[in-house]
Amino acid sequence: MNSVLSVYLLASLSLYCLLLTVGKGEGQFVPGRCECYDTKITVRGPLSDLKVTLKGLTCNTDQIIVVMKRTSEPVCVNPMGELGKQLLRCWKKTNGLDKKRCLRRRRGQGKRGQKQRKLRGQSKESKRRATPIPALG
Image 1 (tube, rainbow, N blue to C red):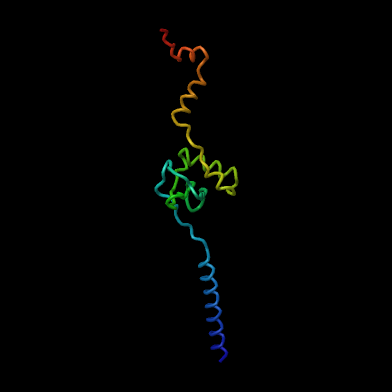
Image 2 (image 1 turned 120 degrees about the vertical axis):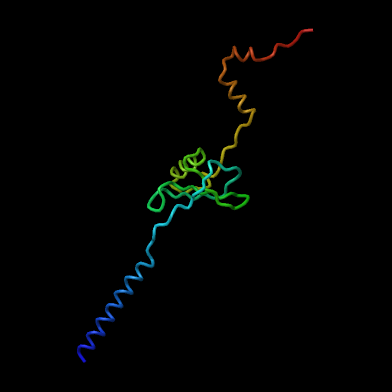
């Protein structure tokens, strides 16, 4: 009777330890893969959200995911591209707290702005030569 009780106690203790081990493994984080496989250098249109995941155990590159405002579609941005570097720099500067500030994009000047920038770089003499001479007569 004593040996049956000790075997039963040993079996129940082993089962309890096994359940504890399995229960702990269920809640542990298992490293996955990168979320971004296909990245774009730039995106057109307004952006509504930004998610940045720095490189770590799960992925060996920084991941920048923006959500397009019009389509609500998530798009992965290349962290080596101009937009990716700009978003990553802003995100790090704000410690990831002010996403909306990082999503505001400056508008381009267009052709008129380019011409004005070119003229600013010229001397006054070359500007005078660039202006047409009015015809007399």
